Image (cartoon, rainbow, N blue to C red; front, side, top):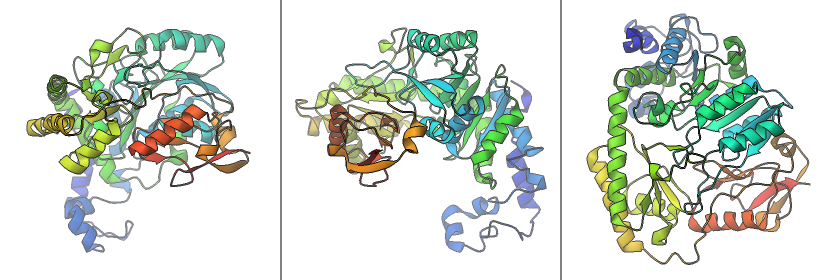
Length: 483
């Protein structure tokens, strides 16, 4: 990695701008915070002074030629990519851009069904046809796993005209597929590989972690820098591999179809500074993440009742590798759904974890966590077991349900629809999503058959306190189905 990684061009340009004491007669209208004293008092004057509009000294994200272009080159080098795009609408926009850069309406893309909703949204907007590979499921934990290489090979053989294969690297729970083998197989059949690395930023800088998309030879990777890379919420990178074969201009044109023309320099500078930080200190920071997560996992498993799982579940197939920085914990053996433990931690112990589902919780560990905070989480889980443990009789013992696809997401979303109570929708084809958020993996997506099992699962999620989203009905009691 070059010596230039200690530079942060966007950050430096903003410092020069601030020092020049420019008088603003452009947007934003708060004029360095002077027009909105309440917001300035809340966010701070430094923040407001550099919340500025694109101008020559600061470059322009939709057509970068100076400091943003320099920052993109530095990020590409740090992440071992041919090119890096700064994304200020999250990894969701990066996922959509990479799908729409390699596929057009009517093209097929092979992907696991346990993708984030942003991937299916891309299919709805573009008319691209999904070929779903059902992920493996761990029967005890109830969680979706990765894709078996054999399953991908079968999908490729049955759909030789598919343009790309998409891989979760890792899943929300930390499970990885054998992405190297998937890349090899896909490339042998002339297909590109798109890696959704919303939860894998640290793979590029840590030791002893699963392989990153770029190192595995993937053609694209969507990297959510704000999750474990330290940048501000809503900022991400889209990485382009060295063998992608798609022009950078074309990819930028696709990005500019939906990305704002008024890019936030707060988000851009946070990406620039966070890349600098990872390049200079990432190895040490991620070693600390691993140490904290391994300690917490060991202590939680000593408590009994919980199961904080790790690489012991690796099987060489759909649980090929595991991200040991993820603190994923199975809770059902103490008689509590993950979402119930999530709620108790927040409401009784002032601890906010990433999410709880029917049988698991996930705590995100980063270099920003202090040892006393790790100890507090471990102690709280021990106390929750002591105070709230009950029989697990009657608890739902599975989670992921393989869908029955009847129509493409695009055709279903834009079809004539009617509204029914979810409880009366069995046998109909859904016109919209239902999901627990987080993690944002659809229980049902447009074009899929609603079954009694799915209705029971949605009802169970509601009873346990999951935050259901996706339907036009904000109460998630009704659902649009194909008329």
